[in-house]
Image (cartoon, rainbow, N blue to C red; front, side, top):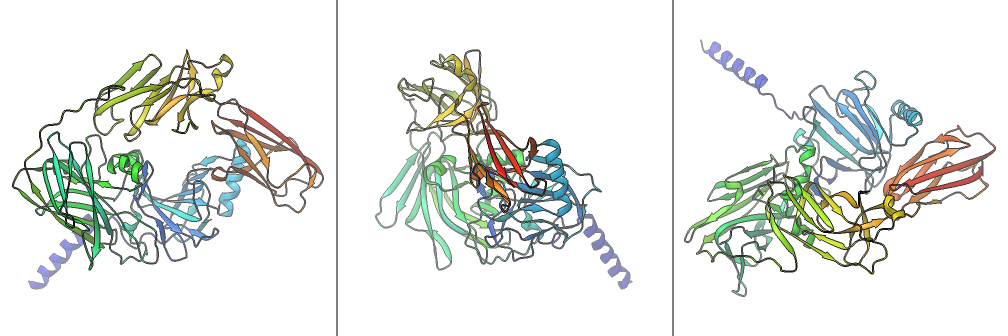
Length: 587
């Protein structure tokens, strides 16, 4: 009887285990490299306008390490690009996940040859291909590529991702137990406190001077933290008093053994008297949610100080699904109440740090009524409704969902009659400290644009020193119409200048019989390189594009015989200005 009971229990446990298998088994994926794993970038690490979608694995400052398939599967996508992930492979696996390998120097020979044939067929360096399941099957540990530094990479490394193929979302690879040694607890550098309500008040006392720092509605203050005897404490503040609605944010970093690179937190939890007020967990993030990083962190603070403060309260227009919260993380303080607050942060290996502090409720401040600057036009700017603003020389259309919180829209025009490189007044559209989630339509009237420049015109951003950078757009019925994704200072510019072509290792009639490649720098002054093409003796040849260095490279592959030849390069910018360069050479 006892044996039957034990057997029944074992069967129940087995059934439960099979019904709820571990979604991240440690032994499913192997390392994509044959060297120890040290990270220069972690999953969901904060980057400009996006969370990092994978791991950046160091390759000892070199290229050319063998890259291995992390599990059985098939190569389902191949991309060659001069920007982004550069040369990249995507491997689909039977478990419903995909692994991604980016910034590769080159692919396995059969893949490389196939893609080169496709490039010549399409006469394009940029190429993308989706093989069928049987074309390039791989086994776990198969050699599939060489590590590199292609695309937007800032140095040799392997960008590695795991994605959920059901929705395309990158998933934290460290959940699968990759062998990254980590015994280091995260560090907490400082927190911020925000006065969020009209009658909110926050007071912070300095223990050394006894002085109080006071903030009211719309303001915030930073409180420094230090690590003392293994415990995080405030460096100088010894008392926090507050009234009304307040929010918090935290800044810090994580590291792992053997690497000095700064990584991000896996979880952030804020509790009030032991109850969770806010928690964020970096398990997975959809690509179309990545830009919500500008709601997750304090965008204006980042612009001002360069610091990444992660909010522990959720802005109304922040649709990230990574949070658990009570009242969106906002704390409402009543006079006389004591709030024992604790920040607890972890990394993906379970290392944990905390910061404890007390907040005491006090009487609120009188409600503040704000008055807009009389020199600016200001209107209520709702985050949850379409908004349009039109003036004599400008129109702005902001769709629902483009903003994370409501505010006051501001606009002013600056006369620019003396500027020689712009063809309108300068239009200061709202504040660059306010982030934008989706595209905003902008129309500007070119008040002094010559007719012969209409096809070359576009919207430009104007820096405080007068320099301009290209935004884009086209001339249409008397206005330049384009799209922006940041508020700033804008005007109408024009690009009528042809791109430049400068050979780096070739002069006319040079003998290249002992040279393995032709290197040429191509550049444009404003609108950017739109397209390029190279031929030798009238036959299209493959010039690879390294966009970050503005260099194109042709590698001799045996198809150019001995004798005299003629190289022709044609480069166009994004406003169809064209430069052609012809150079004879000997091979």
